[in-house]
Image (cartoon, rainbow, N blue to C red; front, side, top):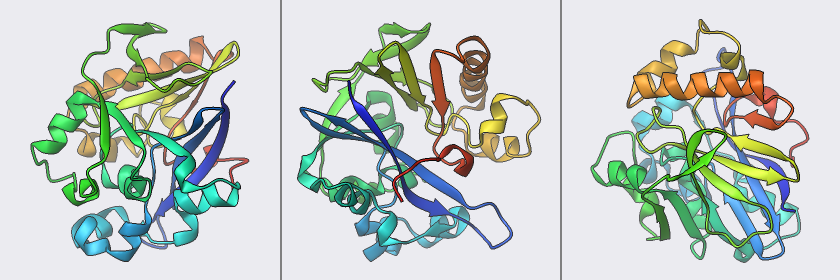
Length: 255
């Protein structure tokens, strides 16, 4: 069974009065190597923030730059090498999710073909400089399998446990969650399908305004969120849900 390490790979805080949110990534440990699920803020972002991210996005999102929070620092703290990372599974291509990709140039990057197409079309939310190292891509053009009733595709990792990209569009057009089998249970990382866990249990959370503003397709975002709310009620004993930014969900993480 794949061993899952929860790691924080960055933090965002626009001002001292606002909530400091995290970049909650996963490190999957298998006999055939390591895989990262999203990569957080990377070393190249810290060294070249204006070129790779830009002043506007840095200020709007409140990027904090701390080398000790990078994925490569956390991986080395666990006793691994960056070369042990064989795969990076990406929910979507927003800059706070893929900044660490350049720190693992040997890794195969798994993502939806829809998301890459949106990225290549030049939407202002994306930063093409974060792909300057020309990563090896494994694209998933179709989600023709079913995971608890949602469109999904098993990731081509050759790991002991099943890992699926689960299509959760809305925040971006090709946004995906990542489901990892843990014996008879599942862990579902939902990326930015919600920002805060409380959204699973209320339809009137204040963060809803920001979520709608940041969605490329808000109707799809709401549908994806409603599916996750259903999971939280119907499959609470089978599926553990968590997102990328809520600090309350990152317990027992690698410091």
